[in-house]
Structures are given as structure tokens and as C-alpha cells.
Image (cartoon, rainbow, N blue to C red; front, side, top):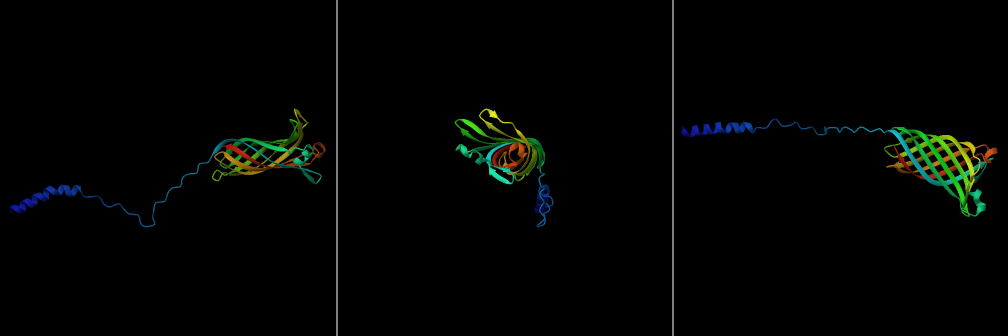
Length: 210
């Protein structure tokens, strides 16, 4: 009887500890193939102003009366190799991958003779629409606007002849820095400019912020 009483007392003392040590029901286990689907992050759409510039070089071709001649060949008699420099300045507003704005294009081809520069200058101001993929960095743009051509020599500049320009371009921009290729074509009155049109194919380095 004494042994039975001691056993009963031990069970009574240990019972609260046994109850406290019991864990709740096991957490349900997901069936194979039923993993929780990850929620895709929402794509951030840019919107606001942009600006940028490019500089580079290229080759030009004059067209007149169905025939064509390279701009560089106009300076062949100088015995000097012509230099072509192109500068583009742009700005505007964008929403997502679509941008609208203006772009100034300045292209000069010249030779230096005895410290004096002689050449042709082509200037335009285009309204430009650009499709610029923010995911891949690739862009394509098209623009149209008024243009003018003038000759210069030293400190003197000839009278400018007015025309119109069409521009198309493609390129790649990453982290603000990029490369681009543009084709510009300017049309003029042959009676004023001496040619119908001029086409430049340009390669450039660029910097753009959006």
C-alpha cells in the first residue's frame, strides 16, 4: 500500500509538467507541387523631363539633278583631308518608353588651310519622337524640322539657305551613356543652294538623363 501511495503521488506531481510539455497540433504541410506563388514586383514607369547630347562624325553626300557627290570631295583641291563634326542637343518630356521633344543638329565639314577653316555648316531644329525601352536600353527616334546650310571661311559666314530636315536614328543607352547611329536628310531649293539635298550618316557617343 505504501508503494502504491508513493507512485500515485509521483504521478500527481509529474502531471502538470507533462501537460505543459505537450505541443500544439503539427502545422499543415503543403502538398508536393503546391508551393506558394511569388508575387511579381510592380514595374516602375518613368515619367518626366529628359535631356541629352551627342557628338560624333560621319560622311555626307550632296544630291543634285539625279547625280551625287561626297561632301568631302568638294574640298579635294585644298590638298587637305576634311574633318566632319556633328553635335546634337535634345530635351523634352517622356512617359514610360515614349518621349517627345526637340533636338538641335549641327554638322560641320571643313578643312584648315594656313590656320584658317573653310567649310559647310548644316543646322536644324527638329521635333522628335523617341521610343526608348527602359528594360533593354535600345531606342529608335524620328524627327522633322527646319534646316539651313551656310558656308564659312575664317571669321566670315555666308548667307544661310533655308530648307527642311528629316532625321531617323537608332542606338543603345545604358546608365546614361550610349552609342547611336543617325541618318539626316536636308532638302533645299537647288536654285538657292546649288543642290537638291544633302544626306549625312553619323555615328556618335551620347549622354542622356531621363
